Image (cartoon, rainbow, N blue to C red; front, side, top):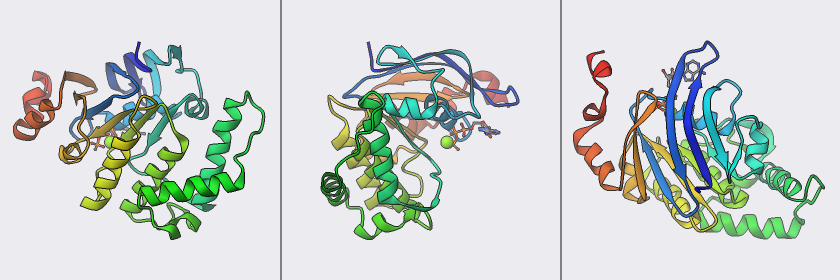
Length: 258
Ligand SMILES: Nc1ncnc2c1ncn2[C@@H]1O[C@H](COP(=O)(O)OP(=O)(O)OP(=O)(O)O)[C@@H](O)[C@H]1O
Ligand SMILES: [Mg+2]
């Protein structure tokens, strides 16, 4: 049984429009999966629904994390249970520094692990950990004391998300379009972050419409996502086929006509 199991998942918008139309996917620890699909195919919608965004309604199907359903759980509980989402468009939080944000996030997870008792990370330990992670992921020191994502460049936002992922140590990390707007160095840092962190303790689901990031992250499994569904799954060679053939070859007949 995989750590994350998605079974026949259907997701609708608030007005009832169905966007995700029956997805089956299993992502285990120590696995790198890539979901690739054209603009508007519903990839971010899938990511938001996995994370529990209130605007996306799960109308059918199941999401199991370590064997237990999370569809009724709020986003914070899903995070405590080991799910992490790096957003395509992360929000700025003026007034909250990167350091204080990371400390609160770590403490929320520690509290959940301690059965609801406060168990804050000692200041010295936090400092050591954050500095080591920033060094490793090449996050400039000065970002730590700035307000989260406030005025950050696209690349800086992504670096800070990878930093967050490294410190929170999720079981399953979902990265949505983390390659968009990244220069080649930032792209490498994101990819190296994924490569380093995926282990017997973590699996990753990388959502993208470019093959580019996959030059640095070699996925074990590639899934082609078109029209709200996974239409084909395979190994890394599938990403290369997409690069040459495009998504057209995978479109269902009714969408080709449209
Ligand atoms: N909150 C929302 N309100 C209205 N429409 C939405 C909302 N969220 C998603 N949609 C619509 O659902 C469809 C799928 O969007 P989604 O963002 O999931 O696509 P995507 O595959 O992530 O695309 P991209 O590759 O451009 O990031 C689009 O037509 C989008 O306009
Ligand atoms: Mg998207």
